[in-house]
Structures are given as structure tokens and as C-alpha cells.
Length: 270
Image (cartoon, rainbow, N blue to C red):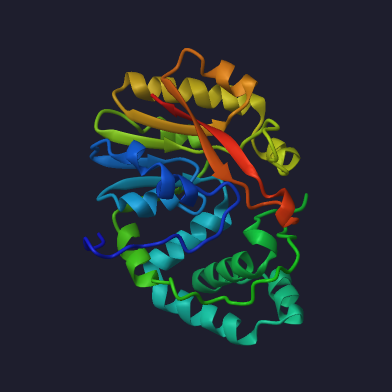
């Protein structure tokens, strides 16, 4: 657990990340709970903000969850390897590391974090063979002033870390649990430029399956917060479920800064 004065920030930049949510809408997170469950972890902005005593964290991205696990188990080795990447960073080095396939847990985690911090806009994308294929970005620092991997490791000591389908994690939620659900957005809403990519990861059938699973979780006594695209089809999907809020966020995915406009997202409190 972190101390009262210690703020632990996400160590990853993630498309669709919820730093904006905890910065501007943290009042929705004031519900008391005993255990925190998040089935689409990503950069974990809400998890780090809440710093729960007990949690279940899950994502289908195996590399992502392996990075969390490596930091929890051996953060010093991860940081040491990441510092090596920071010293050696260059265009040539980036593409060499992108093509590499580390075997050790700590080297794999450091590679994942290095690529996340120096690729284009922190986007995680793989090709049809499952290989990370995002080009080099403009950021050059693999080590950040905000890094505190020891504190991250301490928070993760009391967390269950899982790789897999969201439904397995949601089905664990019951009385006393806070379930925060932030799935990939699979309908076009405002300026979401990654809808086509998301559709290969999370289909509309998955959206329906997710809705049904969070309804079951609520019936078991869990408190549920769900974010999604503010789109007619999504609002209709949840029209008789919970209370709806329209939230604004700032899009950071457009390459052209003139196109980085305000976007709307849906929050469903169930």
C-alpha cells in the first residue's frame, strides 16, 4: 500500500487510458469497497489512483500483464534493464529492440515499457502475426522523473494478476467489490481513429456479452462503473441499465494537433 502522501502514477501511456477520468471525475470513485476488480487493465490509471488493499487485475494482453508481473516480482531488474535502453536509445536501437524477443521476465518487461515510451503516441498495436509494429515516435526518454517502480511493485503485491477474457474477471465480482470496466471502443464516436483496429479485438457480440456480465455482477451485489463510447448504439445497449453520464475528454491520438479535439464518453454507474 502507498502512504497517504505518496502518489503512484501509471508507468505506461495507453490509448484510451483513464488519467483524464481520475483527474476530472474522481468523485465517481468515492464508493467504499473491499476489493477492486478491473478486467481491462491497460495502464491502470484508476487502479493506481485508488491504490486498493485487494484487487483482481486482468487483461487479454499477455505482454502487458507479464510486465506488471515482472515489476511486482523483481522491479529492480526491470528498472536496471530499462535504464540500459534509455542510455542506448536511437532510431536504429529502437527497431532492433522492437524485433527482439527477450526470454527473461524482466528483460521482456523492460522492452515492453521502452517501446511504449518511445513509440508513436504510446500505441499498442500488433500485426496479424502478433508482432508489435508501431513506428518510432518523438519521445526519447525511457526513464521518467515520475518513475517509482518500487511503489508500483508494493501496490501489486496484493493484486491477483490474470491474462484472459474479461468475463472471467467480471464473474468474480460480488458484494463488497468495485468493478471498473473500460473496454475497447468498437463504434465510431467523434474522432476515435482506432475503431477499425479495436473491432478485431472486441466485437459487438463482445459488447453484448459484457453488458450481460456486468448486470449479473450487479445482481451479485457488486458496484459497477463502466465507460464506453458515447454513441447511440452503446447508449441503447445500456438504456435500462444504471445511470448514464456524458463525460468530456481530450483526444490525444490524432497525429495532427489541430485534430485533437474534445471527445465525449459514456459513464454508466450500475
